[in-house]
Amino acid sequence: MTHTEQESTASRLFESVRLGRLDLPSRLVMAPLTRNRAGADGVPGELMATHYAQRSSAGLIIAEATTPNAVGQTYPHIPGIHNAAQTAGWRRVTDAVRAAAGESRMFLQLQHGGRVGHPDTSGHIPHAPSPVRFPETLHTPSGLQDAVEPIEMSAEDVRSTIADFATAARNAVSAGFDGVEVHSANGHLLHQFLAKSTNRRTDEWGGPAENRIRFTVEVVRAVAEAIGPERVGVRISPGLGVNSIDEGDTEDIYAALLPALARIDPVYLHLIYADPDQPLFSTIRKEWPGTLIANPALSREDLAADGGMRRGERLLAEGADLIALGRGFLANPDLVERLRTGAPLNPIRPEFLMHVHGAEGYNDYPTLAEL
Image (cartoon, rainbow, N blue to C red; front, side, top):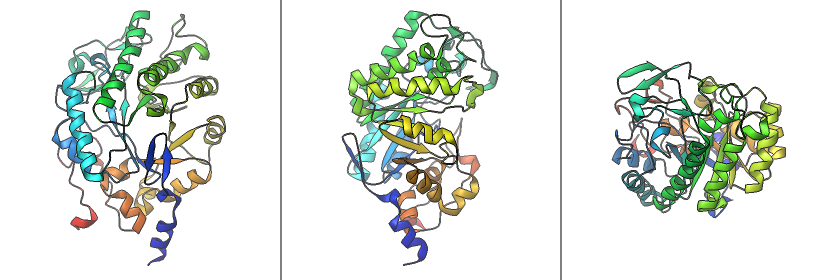
């Protein structure tokens, strides 16, 4: 056995671990990765079933961002989970993963785009906490277009959207998922409520941080009541400016949000761009009483060298419980086995990271058995 193989075999990344009601065979999580591979109606098809089945050796799969209602759609060919056909499509995916792995160990990420959407894609003018236009262009079925001014959500819109998340969670469980991840990150609707730049409301859903966290907290509470907190995770991205978001008072937001979420007791908190060298990571680890999934930002050099193992090990040493990897799983369907044995990794190919139209290269990366 080579030195690399000995290091890989001894890695804490490959320890089994308990997550709520699930026994995970390793601490390696496949991060949710938008792939634009559903049909125009948001129904997952065989291509998606193949993709997830190929990656079924992950300790946990968090399936890609999926809309809880029609108005929440971000880009073309994003899957939904708000009607019977979409639910049945996802059932084919979870069945394929279960057939490949013997069990599913899958959560589904629920994401409402808020202002990050376009009527040419969804058929609806997007809803948002305030009528603040998204300043970037958006992919639509007819190409890149400027965003439109979103409709400010009424109190009834807020309540109905919370209910939609709960219904979507029930649909996900019906489709065979073990749970759902509520996406309160990356500049989408829940994150828009958190941030000062996009939430200019003066009612109970806006103003001080204690009000701006209310929507995320109420969504998570409704989802937990619908399917049980042991089936619910939450994703956050403190201070991250993706999709032109500016939180404004990051420290105040998460000082209020984390204890409010902890009282609901979701099964995990998923931190994007977790960095063991930044004080934010240690602060969140100290404040969060439950399971913490750390999703590190990896350079191409990190990925080429060891697929992110060293960074993952550091995060585990600093208190993370699980490590979520994205691009590594895209390029290497059998990433867990490659890391465990020290086998060579397929290179990251930028043209395959995300497609808006077409499916070229989606499942073209070879496994070790195919080399």
